[in-house]
Image (cartoon, rainbow, N blue to C red; front, side):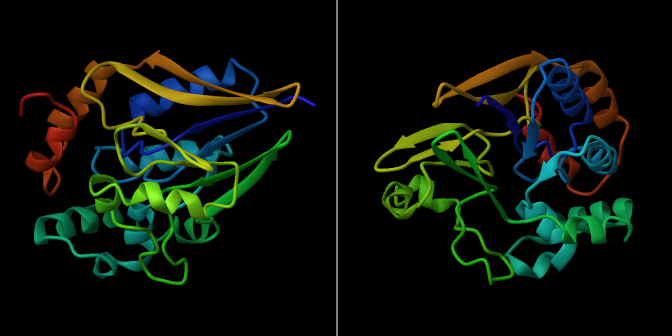
Length: 236
């Protein structure tokens, strides 16, 4: 039985990239679409991006930025400017999105043919904690390679780290990177398809309207913008 899924992560308020991804997905007949969190914050259009996720019935998995919105900025150490930025995001979203985000999970598990797939924003240390994710430092110190051994699914797909990578051990870990924090006019998502019990994973590169994004960035004033701009420009 064929099954075709699409997955992307870390849009971070880049409305133009999200629109391009969703337009391509609509033209390619996917059974389900997953977003691995961090739809909001950093970029200039958190509300519009979240509206598109809801409107298009995307299965959203909570990222750390959604948790800051739901639980506040004290769940993780951050500087005052970052806290101000998160307060701006919350003021844009108001309270109308709380019920929706509270209904979104930290993890979705899906069987595709004979393959057990786990979708999550990042490896989870303890889902009972206010901030449940492992620290990003596990990538730099390479302890993530040892944590992969304990994963129970055949493949775990994550975001959070904005650069993609793959670890193959007893289980496979795929980090798909950020489809929103971009320094050129290319964005992407991944296609997962079961064909005769073989899981085919493909990277789908597409163009988005970067000029419109930059115009919005330049004409939107919000906290921590000068620091955040480094995610969107090579030299800033």
